[in-house]
Amino acid sequence: MSQFKLVNLDSAKGEARDLLEGINTKMGMIPNLYAAMAQSPSTLAALFALSSELSKGTLSPALNEKIALVVGNDNSCGYCVSAHSKIAAGLGMADEEIIEAQKGNSEDPREQSILTLAISVNGNHGHGDNSAVRRALEAGLSEAEVIEVVGQVVKNIMTNAVNGVARTAIDFPERDLI
Image (cartoon, rainbow, N blue to C red):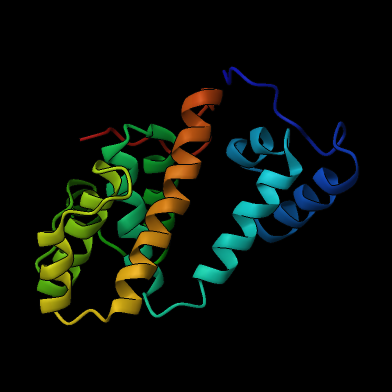
């Protein structure tokens, strides 16, 4: 059970209701994370705005999910690991690939440099290890892509932190942290 009250369509008002209606229309459900975040409609709207803008970047949806998996696992966020595992599977990722992403591993050198960079940025509180940045650039990432990875990490830290504070009940098939 979530520690924080979950806002539902019956109890939501104003902007929170509008946001939750949009989620329900798009997903056919309101994930508990969003129901908890609806306590602060401006925070939920900010997450959606950040997610929307980052989706216009050059990193693929599958790679963004791998970043979410490694950051969620690194931050011990069972909710996010469970949710992003389901999303990744929906994108056609095999279970082994999802597990490897959780561990921060990829057979592709470019992807590996991105996952290593994500771990570094997350673990160093935004101050990525210069060697991780250098390896990402050497693997062919542009400076813009390095910044985009940082944006993805920040988005996931936000949801990991909300889940940690709210103790959000997992409403996706549960996945173990690695």
